[in-house]
Length: 403
Image 1 (cartoon, rainbow, N blue to C red):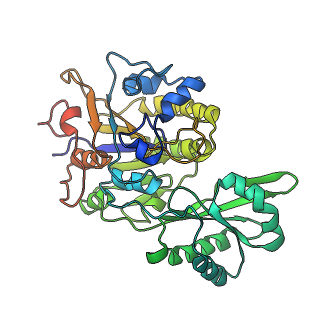
Image 2: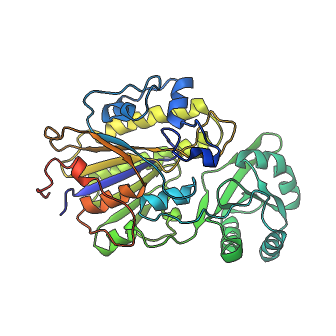
Image 3: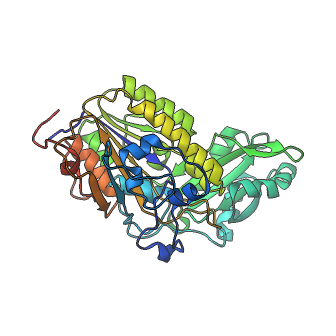
């Protein structure tokens, strides 16, 4: 049964709402991205609070619970064994990984780096875990002098390649990353190879540009594939075409920042066809979580709330919004890595909610419940191989009626 004509699933990248039950296993005891930001910066989130955000994060300053939220609220725990971008997004689409992806805390094996260097015809600098902004400051001068590319990794399963645009123009850098992608399967597997172009000089400093590109492993079969097979029009917005390796959608709007993503979603809401839209707001994680920038993170949340108010204005009957995240990234911790957290679950539609007494959909056991709900709300049967339990009965005031 089809409950809605259109479903928007919006990921607030890294906006966690408190430590997951297994946070200690990841060294993340006590983390709470949203709550700790609220404790150190001024948040103004009237739209998110009206949907029930404050009912999720208890005892956080400025995040008050409301007695009668306009939407449904809950939290989701990650079932997969990691806290990275790929694992989180794949799980949202019904794929629960059984093993954590390989990481390289000591850098990549010498034989891999030597073969990579041979194939691209350039030397390699770095080859260790590092902050992307810090390593270009450290190694940028040598990179300019020698032409060797900067290779680094993180706590995630990533092979990152940084190069100045005057040394390796974009198309060359992308070609270099495609070489790395071919080499990082099997024995040396990583989830993503990431191109990190930058500009600047020694005197004025170096700045990463917005022309990042991710080269992901192909995902297993997931809810995107199932929706496309069922004839649903699927649109991805943000970096998701990269995360899902160019598969599982009819249209992709590749945006590079929150502003671009918000504009694209506004256009889709006003002019888009029926179907599913899956979007990622990247700035929270990329610009602020990984840089421990509490003030910047708070500012981005306030800006997102203002955007959301406009997005929900004139919300159409038959449209459904699901807001969530893919992991945490508590900027108040010493680390700049992701944090193992529960993620928010806020659901809104303009149908009559008068006969729905309980707005709390609980703490879901897997992110995959979001994908299962998207499919069920659009009338697509759940494939047996995919994870997730939908919560349509919790949010649909009249389960027997179709749109």
